[in-house]
Length: 224
Image (cartoon, rainbow, N blue to C red; front, top):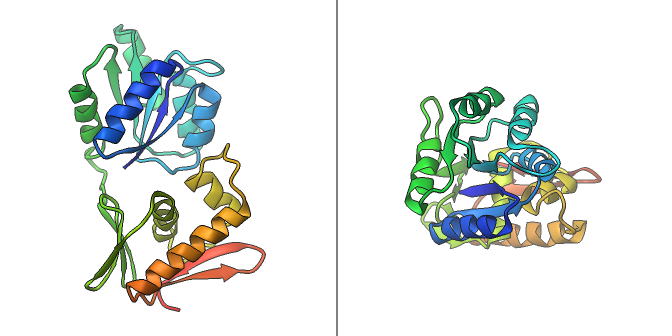
């Protein structure tokens, strides 16, 4: 699972990332509200951990901006304030859960587990297109009895493509969602990882193909 941490306290942000990564999550960390909105709007995350007191835009504003942009990613709000009015303001802003500092690693992980099994939501452990399956936990790409492990960036791109089968995705979209909107990654990076991913799809014998749409981007088709 991929988690966005929006926290201006560098030490706490680092601690959160370490806890998450030690428990199998991948993380991106940003330190102000504007960056939180920019990253959150990519739709690349399974959960957003959001502090209330942030520079440039507070957590309530970030949550409202993401919901107005139709981003449905679950949001866990972190705050040192435990007043009922603050909790109500948080929920009214569109957050899904609320945790007061300080908290234990076990409490944080319990909240994340609860968020990913919210009533009415379906949490997929795999994505499948045609004969090709991507395991979101192990990062394995599978076709029939053949399986191969993907690198972090191969997995990020595969997840985007399998999550939008048939959709044409530009290089700019892939960079924003796989590397982050402030990344210095270039078209050449995308081309290289698309090539790696194609080779691994061929290795497992999949009939699915990543098609190049000239001057536009890439599209995953069930059969070549």
